[in-house]
Structure formats: structure tokens, C-alpha cells
Image 1 (cartoon, rainbow, N blue to C red):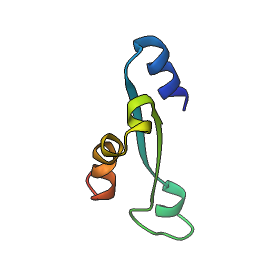
Image 2: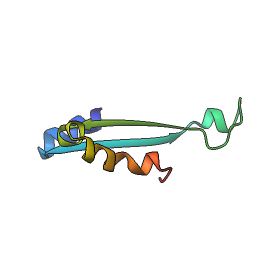
Image 3: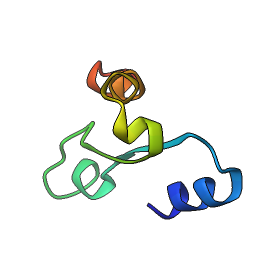
Length: 67
């Protein structure tokens, strides 16, 4: 959210989308030892939040498994 807020404040765009995909090293290296365990979070503002088609296009790489 902080990255999206900063981009929105500094650039004044029509929309902002921030997508973060991170690997849980605690899950992959110790404990469960589940390789490839990731978490995805996003923060959308403006056009990307309000327009379903734009939002879907932005999130397609995540939904399709592409990084």
C-alpha cells in the first residue's frame, strides 16, 4: 500500500497497480519444506481498482501463473 500511495502522490496517474509475489523461505528451507510456496499481494488505485477489465488485465499474469 505504501508503494502504491507514493506512486499515486508523486505521479498523479489515472491508476496505480502494485503487485508483489514473494517466496516464503521459512516454508521452503525449513519447517514444511514446501518448495515454491509463495504469497501474492496487490494494491490497486484509481482506474485499475474501478475498471474490472483493466483490473483483470493487470492481474492476468498472476492468475495465469506467469511471473
